[in-house]
Image 1: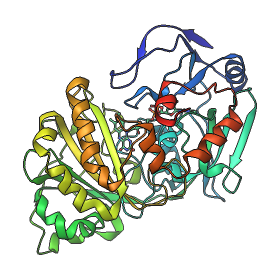
Image 2 (image 1 turned 30 degrees about the horizontal axis):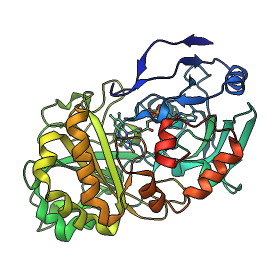
Image 3 (image 1 turned 180 degrees about the vertical axis):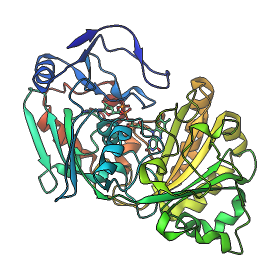
Image 4 (image 1 turned 45 degrees about the vertical axis):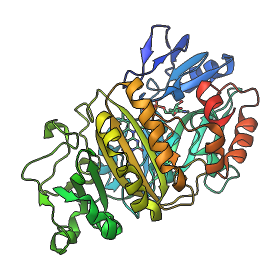
Amino acid sequence: MTTTASPRTNWAGNIAFSAPDFYRPASLGELRAVVARARQVRVLGTGHSFNDMADSPGAQVSLAGLPPEAEVDSAASLVRVAAGVTYASLASRLDRHGFALRNLASLPHISVAGACATGTHGSGPANQNLSAAVAGLELVIADGDVVQLNRGDDGFPGAVVHLGGLGAVTRLILELVPSFEVSQRVYEGLPLDVLDDHFAAIMAAGYSVSMFTDWRAPRLTQLWVKSLAEDGPPAIEGEPWFTATPAPSTRNPVPGLPGDNATAQLGKPGPWFERLPHFRPEFTPSAGDELQSEYLLPAEHAVPALHALSQVSDRLAAVVRIAEVRRIAADDLWLSPCYRQDTVAFHFTWLPDTAAVLPVVTLVERQLAPFGPRPHWGKVFTTPAAELAERYDRLTDFLALAGHYDPAGKFRNAYTARCLGR
Ligand SMILES: Cc1cc2nc3c(=O)[nH]c(=O)nc-3n(C[C@H](O)[C@H](O)[C@H](O)COP(=O)(O)OP(=O)(O)OC[C@H]3O[C@@H](n4cnc5c(N)ncnc54)[C@H](O)[C@@H]3O)c2cc1C
């Protein structure tokens, strides 16, 4: 087991982890011993969250040294995967078995456990977030015991999106679908006012649709439509209101960046895992030098929420690299930002300047407040705990679950104190 106290940061470099002890156990036994012994402990996934949620006042543990197993049960259409495995690594293995995950996030570099812990999502009105594929999970709880929770068990819907607060998740069981092909097309220059009457139709024009704007003009810089290859080109091209231009070459959603790190476009069909993310695993995703925030709210408020953001477009434009709008289907997971609501998500990739960005983050929260926005747990937000409690009906139940598995609060940190009041 590796142990180090050297200073480390999250992927974006905006958080210097303060945990005095860092462990990388090589076996379940070693992990159980670390957790049982620690007074305070948190697990670090691949560190792609933009806040201090993975930090710890005591031990911080990476599970990247545990065997990267992924056992496919073809008969049941399930995979049992080690927590630290990334979606990039898992996806190609699943595809070789003829299976797929229903959806992926914009990047495949993140760990399965870390992504599911925060309710990470892609897009598509019929696609739930990645956590909704979880059919079971195994975790090492505060006293070092191993607990298995499966769908149908008491507390299971509370345990899937757990923000790292219940224990160290060592394995997840994910539901699979048969492998499928996707083709991706990018369009440019759709006027924002077209969305007033056609937002839902455009979002439903593909399996997964993303709208991008830099807020510097009232138009979408890009519209990414990922279609099931069997469906052919998206129907929007024939619509009278559709005035966007097909991009003539491969695009990066971040203005000014080359298309090389983006997944294949121009309508060329390919495997699900090479089209559903925006970014290819062998490159740095997105800009690299950035912060991110995202707010999720009921899909029926999409157009008024867009108008509310347009009112402050000059403030957004000053600090944003690119913004993205996506749709996600409702789920039943207590701390999921999509809990019991079909959702629209407003994402912001900011310049890497915390001091300049934070006031604009608060402004976005104020503009979106009438729509009850739930911030992405893994990104930058300033929403106070009292407002989070109002927006999560099952927060009290989650806190009771955390008290059950972790009575002494070993898995608490500054983030859980600030956001959950625990
Ligand atoms: C470039 C970029 C693009 C992104 N795109 C998207 C996107 O398209 N959609 C989206 O929703 N999000 C997106 N995100 C956010 C990202 O998906 C989430 O922050 C995700 O949680 C990161 O996973 P991770 O493995 O890095 O987890 P970490 O950031 O390391 O950890 C996240 C939380 O999970 C806990 N945790 C991790 N592993 C375990 C474990 N095994 N047991 C217990 N707790 C654990 C940690 O303690 C922490 O609280 C993006 C981030 C970046 C940097």
